[in-house]
Length: 487
Image (cartoon, rainbow, N blue to C red; front, side):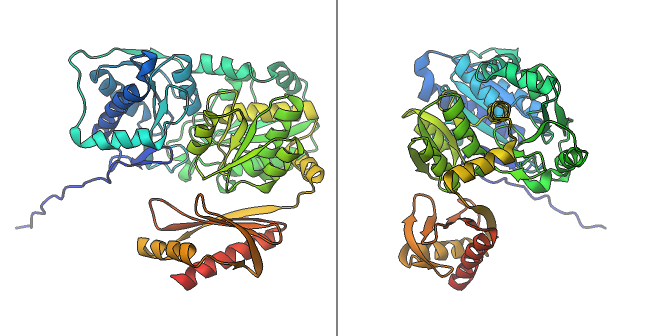
């Protein structure tokens, strides 16, 4: 007789919000039951924190991931059962479109089903406040604290009404740029736009906003993301490389630009007319210059500590103050709610604007970048070179993630940084140490090295900027050797 195996009970990871939402593996950690619970509790906390506006409405939206519409529908039902009225999106849309809807509709906030740039096995849930941006950690901690109490159910349920988030969002973005100038340049053949939407929520976005087609790549739905991840990094965009390089080699006339969006369209990267990838380390300085010099905007420039020194140099060239924050857009958003801000951006591609909602918005960033190209007559690479010349900036940048054996090793490395802070890096004296998020070492030759830790896993994150890529790798290799010697 065959042995009978007793079934084991799988218990998913505890529900824990990270830098921007709760994420987990679909069917393991991220389940319908858990989504129902977190959505209903989030609505309750949104009312507690933002209910002074008198609203009882919560926006519910979603991206293009596997089961996202179904998860959103369940979330809407749970929120309604908790006694709140729901505006449920009838289609996928960018996360910033739902943040905009929360602001424009005067809602309590928004709940968005998305795992952003994570691989296909993941889904997630983001909570947005009535002000149109990600809620601070204090708010998500309140949600986590209520989890043991279970899902709230009201005596009188709320209503669920479907809505299309695109029209209001597109109208808002159209009003922020010279849309006619961009349309005219494309129509006249002076500008050719390629957009890799990475099978994500930005699909169709340019066409909706511009009212005309551009060259969209990976606009079809693919819940597996071709085996990769919808993250705007060079390794995930082979089709865009080929399209732009083919056009460049053909000798086609006019300016050519490439825009890359992440899975929920809150991060952006670019590519110039020769097929060179450009991260936000390059794009943010271009945007600072464009918004100040051509649009006349003013305000503080916010950069995270991993941001390029070129951002600071361009800001100083225009007489703008710079505020440096820990890594994470929540810190930028908090600052936007406190003071006048021109632009705030992070190295990973999240960029937002003080004259808009305090939210990363890749489509708005893309429109400003197109406007900068049209108004200047230069592509991204040419704009970057011009700013480097104007500011006498020479720099290269890279980052690596170094897996650690376990969390004990992480603790040992952190203790070493705190109690035996290095005075020299790769043979260069340390001139300043900033410890608002990890340890950032400014070096005597003008370069810098940032050592910081993942908050949830044994990973050491290393970042560096220096005059040459060889110097960058020298700093990063020093950090790797340091980590091995301590552990």
